[in-house]
Amino acid sequence: MRSLNAIIVCYIFWSLISCQSSEKKPSMKSKQEFTEGFIQSSDVMIHYLDWGGIGQPFVLIHGLGDTPLIFQDLASALKDNFRIIAYSRRGHYKSKSFNSRYDTEELVSDLKLLIDSLKIEKVNLLGWSMGGNEITEFAIRYPERTNKLIYLEAGYDLSDEAFTNILKNLPKSPLPDSLDLTTFDAYRKWYHNYWFSDIDWNPALEANLKASTQINPDSTVRTIPNDYIFKMILETAKSYHRDYRLIQAPSLAIYTKPFFVPPVKNENIVSAYGELEKNIINPWRLSNMKRIRAELKNITIKEMPMGSHTSLIFLSRDSIIECIDSFLLK
Image 1 (cartoon, rainbow, N blue to C red):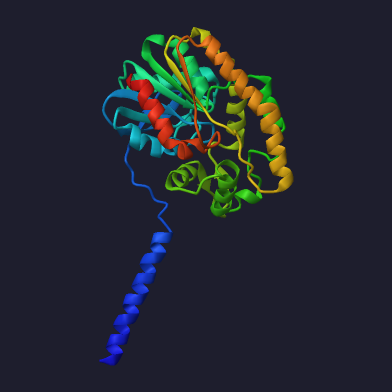
Image 2 (image 1 turned 90 degrees about the vertical axis):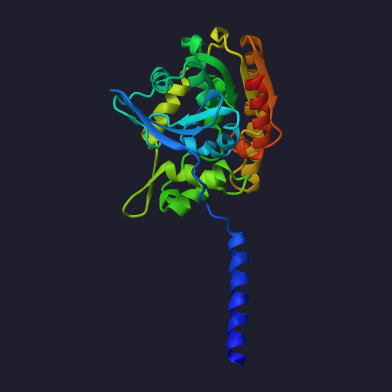
């Protein structure tokens, strides 16, 4: 009997330890709150996620190299007031290009194809980072189909010489090297440190990273899009000069700073990023904000309290949602 009691006590003890351990290590799996769909033409197959929701249609466009899954936290809150849809840019995640074109004209035609196929008469658009090009050109070409625009850290003209200078002066390359691609764990570590070093890893980042990679038979990683497509899209994005004066739709531009967070705590690297922010990025940001105020007919500018160019959607999530709700619902 004494032996049985000891077994029971041990079982309870180990159960408690197991529960505490599971609380310390939250699952990286996120609950799927969306449905997936595909739209195809002779030139492209577009993959999209639909979170549903009621109210005005609201389409979200991710940045270069990401997927719609990066928007999970925002979409789950925004669907209370809007029908939320986000799609994969051609060459990203499950979207395919059949004509190997990635210029702004093609990217905007993909957006138009999505909106037409979903029978959306008039749409609100959010572009994050490079997505600002697509929403700008769409609003210029189709003013009758555009309701309002939101530039989420996207109120930057990438054709400015300052942007090229930023890329040239980055202390560390924005692309992983061969060692970073030896395993998925190695790639996750690089990606987290380079783009999101100021936040804890979370399910949305895990889902986004998995959707933007393929694992080779030898366990090495291939990125989606591959380096060739990535560089091609970046070059076409840099060649597109925005003419805000042609936009009729009311617009909201959301900014934050710093643009980058140093990926390593090395004193020299931290100092180099600080100089880059001070001497090139901050003047570029202020110049773009000044231009937007002058050229967009109906513009609201908001600066977020926390986060970098990438991490603001997590660190300033509540502020972003409040800004978007206030802007779109008024």
